[in-house]
Amino acid sequence: MSQRKSKDPAQEKEGINPAQKKEDVIRSDAPMQGEGNYSAGRRYDKSQQDFVKSGQVDEAARKAEPDSAQEREDMQKAEQEGRRHARK
Image (tube, rainbow, N blue to C red):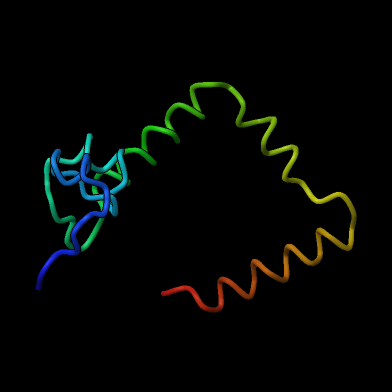
């Protein structure tokens, strides 16, 4: 399978693949991720740890609470529906 040539001569000269994300090029030492994108997983894990350390979890939980009884009921129904499809 042949690779498509870049139309930008500067990118061709530097060997840059415009389809790759900058984060993956910089942080990933594996050219192919296979079954999972490990660099994306590490970025996600780090962002979650940083969020927990920031102390904003309680505030975010309060903002996520339903504003009315109807919204609470809708959220509970949606959760039950999701659990019906979950693996056991």
